[in-house]
Image (cartoon, rainbow, N blue to C red; front, side):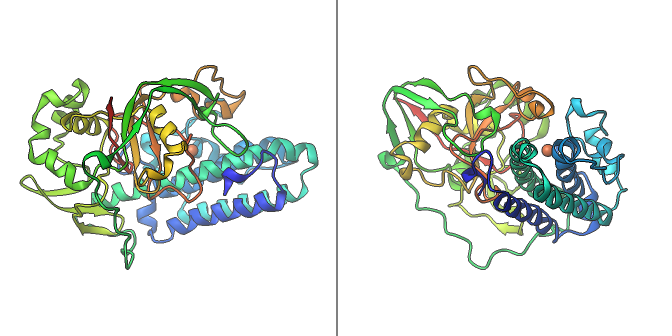
Length: 410
Ligand SMILES: [Fe+2]
């Protein structure tokens, strides 16, 4: 996938990957009705139709408009509707009001996507070499951007469907879900990590986001990192022990969030007293599974659980060093299950400078008040992540597929 592409890849290979990603987005929307695709369930979550249109607009705004000779936007008014947060690209429709965009229709957004796809094909086939050299990195960025929105589409749909008393499933459950790995106890649970200097950040060829650089040395104290993710059963023990009723376990802001929101369990659990019964998923309401990794936690809940467990959250540097070192195969489920909250604020690496122009707004301006998550979830598109990948969300966010892996001082 994209991480294997050089900065200026073969045209046919990139076009093939691009069209495959574009088609996958359409396929993710296919199980949803037009009504499903228009609703915005909360300010942080966008309608499916908006994701579909915004990812098309990104290619128009970043590639076709600036670089395709004579390109005319599909509809010049769409820039205002589907620009997410790029100040350099003009005024925007307010984010919390994306669900009010009953026009353009789902069908019109589909036509928009088809027109952009056709323009991308023509552009890739016809661009001169200098234009191609400028465009290829932006096309790869657009491809990775669209993959990020594929995951958001799913988490936003899950939140939307969870609010419907009919408890509708996005898709039917797979016939044989993968069994979780066996639980690890005692010393088996921990990967012992000596003190030392490690290199952190993306190095070498292949796509990466700007926030993964510059690669730089970081000193780590001796510590242990859990080989396994925290399970539903372990989190249920925290609940049963009154974890949500003990302010001493919580950061001040976290305890305030517990009080303000009435949190008693992960976002989609149904409890009978303190006992978990079921969990709402993309496959509808399913029986609660003790062995699965706990998910849909805020950073505050992850930190409180770690405190209760006599441990702590890993720093993002501890996570990355373990995931890239010789001991990496000993980590269970490093990716593909849940994003893992770290104890690291989303800050620029030393020497970080965002690129010039609108693409410089992609990551850098969000580097305050957010927490880094590492790994990747069951909704992360195949091939999208890497060990240096930095996901980030505000500490109270629970609608992403976020869990945790413990760490401990040594
Ligand atoms: Fe976006």
